[in-house]
Image: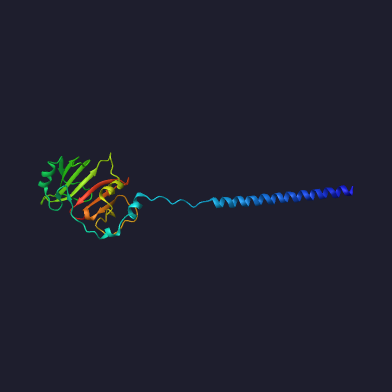
Length: 211
């Protein structure tokens, strides 16, 4: 009877040891698995740049030194050409009147309105002084049904641009974060783009002077 009792105790002891060893092995297995998962983890992928960030990073600091040059638009020298010169080249306008501006009275200015002239799709407007008749600005408004993207505009007009807020067209103050609408400015071409929220060109302006 005593031998049988001793045998049962020994059997219970070995069973307990085996169970402890199994638990130990399982625990070790879990640790290794966790380590394996940690090794397989990869850092977050770099987020692609937005269109605005690409514009900012592509600016050339040399463009900051460029001076505004009065442009020549289709044979019309801004700052010198007059009302009669416009009509000679483009004919009678479709309509005309004072330019509309919600913030500033522009009763001293007059504007000719044309549509689909000179291979430009949609609206072209010529702004001149009502007294001297001298051409001050040309406004080109792309067709909303066939919008002009920023990328396409830069492909056409080149990379010598500055990015500015609408309040700082002629300023050296840089625009560092997106604030719609904003401007893409070409001082040596005497022109700038008005960019709306969809990152399309709303209007292209040619101007005799930086305003």
